[in-house]
Image (cartoon, one colour):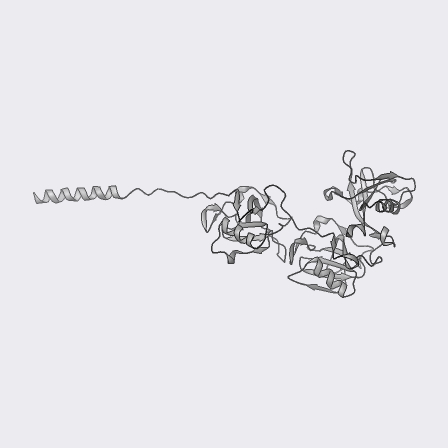
Length: 377
């Protein structure tokens, strides 16, 4: 009888044990992006997509997609902590990648491609329910919901008044044949302002920034191996400055050049024309045009003796910053230009009606010039 009672007690205990131990359920959390993240009164960051970090590029200053890593200052990496950290440092862009890295900036590299959102799917180490980018891909947040993300740009003018330098363009540079062969220095805090000041102090009237952290000075904008400097497309100069990631400081073998406005004779005549500062103009390149939407939409006229100087003087005297020549004898004036309409210089091949040694555009192709003086103000 005793053994039966013990058996009954054992069965009841076993049943209770089974009832008290629930089956294990797999409740893995799927991380998600947050459409928006508040960052204090009146400030919100919005999800703007998945961007590549450019890990494959040999980094120097300004080569990253976002250049200011603040991970070490955060207690843990979540979307909220990263955005809050960037906001506290007055950055408008915040990015999280590799699940554990937070970086900030006020401009994203123009070379950083936007990827499919599925490329950013790693959970944050500080919150497994949130997505913190992908392997070397940023989940990117910005203070504006819809405007294009800002990219580094070249300031049109550095400095003020007679001490200022005007941007002349992006030029090819080589170690063997320097476009600017004078004094130089490198710095982890390079900016166009720092470079132009250095060159002016060294009595040079040309200054160029390259590789994000290099400054070069010169007397003439010309490579020893060439009859004239090689003007590159503006998009070739895209590397952010090591000291100001919103500004461009050249790129690999590309130098962003600035010229002092108080010295009219430092440049090759093919680039800078005219000895009178009021009428000096810079060659900007060849641009496409259309009848529906003119590249330059201001004053225009035709002349059987058209030259670049005739067109430029007419436009600048009417306070237009740009002068454009088309079909040999047409002149157009304007104050704004769409850089995306730049085309190969060989497309502007029609001789000027008043000077057949030089081209004056082509069929819906504009030889474009800008005023040196008016572009300063």
